[in-house]
Length: 359
Image (cartoon, rainbow, N blue to C red; front, side):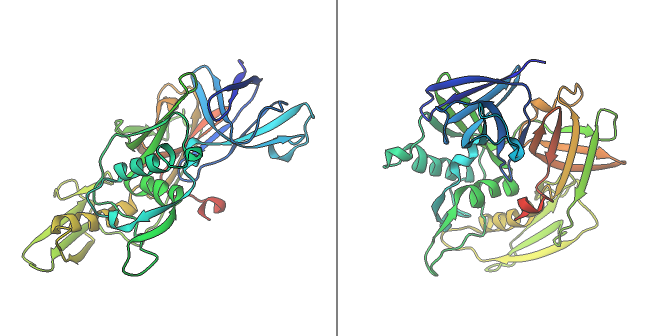
């Protein structure tokens, strides 16, 4: 079997060194970004905050080095002094910083994708502190999500600002609630980091989880106290005006009375339009907060060969929707992670059972 190639670069993409490793396992979890490790030949020039690229054939992984250990290997095992263990995290961890958030943006006219793009630009591309800017970073949007919100409130009553962690409070919740995610394309030769913000528009695929090509499967459905599948919102300044939203079998919702989840569990709400927000905008925002909070509320793990010819797991992207069929039932879910070693395990849904990840 061919070895993995490991390349290290500094923060300006200047080449530091090349190494070979025989084995490598990679875990990816968008909702709880993980640290991965690789053991290479000792090199004093490799340091924390450098960039790393690991590749073999069509496989490619990269990220930011978070720790360099000599004499201690993966899982704290003692190794030769001529070797070192490099720990690294995914690119999204670049944005694990506190930001000042304007709570008035929630439900406003700025899309969630544009807000994320503007924040990345302000903090990491056009920052007045040049040392905070990331060399080669660019950001673009690929979708538009209005009427978004995370129930973030101002620190001071009557004002509209609070301090939040950009990764935990915005980016991860954008994926959980609106399926908006960040995709990174790093070109080490061109010295660029391209970040795209948007929903995954790839077609939903169906996976027969009971077929022999699935080595192991685990399906956990998270019970939710809110089983609402029909929402009626009234204009409290004129109750003759209302909007009705329906939850569909594929987990989506809109005002179309078709392919509905039954039996009916209805919720009713009232909103008060004002000079800033119309009735439709407020009603849509209420529906978004209600229905998106229960989307893909499951944990489905499917283990298969890395080169599975039915599913092609390497071609699946984070944020892609899946229809998993098992035991005669169909489950709508979304790809949120992968565990890659000798096999590939797809991690789907927004529920996590690992206590450390829940915390």
